[in-house]
Amino acid sequence: MNAALTPIREAKTILLTTYKRDGTPVATPVSVAFDGERAFFRSYDKAWKTRRLRRNPAVQAAPATVRGRPTGPAIRARAILLDGEQGRVAARALARRHRVLQAILVPTAHRLMRYRTQHYELVPP
Image 1 (cartoon, rainbow, N blue to C red):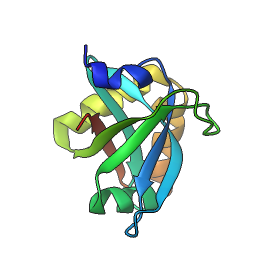
Image 2 (image 1 turned 90 degrees about the vertical axis):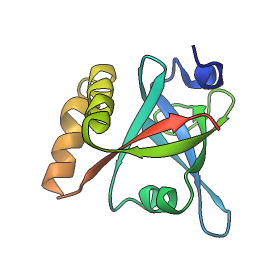
Image 3 (image 1 turned 180 degrees about the horizontal axis):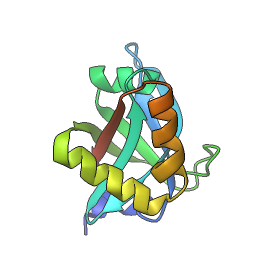
Image 4 (image 1 turned 135 degrees about the horizontal axis):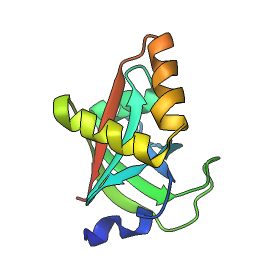
């Protein structure tokens, strides 16, 4: 087991902190899912957090409530953009863990809004 990801292992939602150009932290709750030792989350191409991740993949992740209140210690990680088969692995993991939200509602909303869904893996530094 990857000990670095242990603090968020049981969480369904994490508080993902990304950083602006000037270093200001911005925290956003996101759904997280695991496939073996790998942790995944998704966003869409026009989201501000996605733009911040393009510039700086360094993040902090803490277990949290759905509304974004941290419930445990934060870990440092890098958010790696996935594509192709790796993106599909992430999508399946999220759909298994969050059957209604990530399997039906979010993909449907992204399609209707014409967003491009992007999947990320959290990798310890």
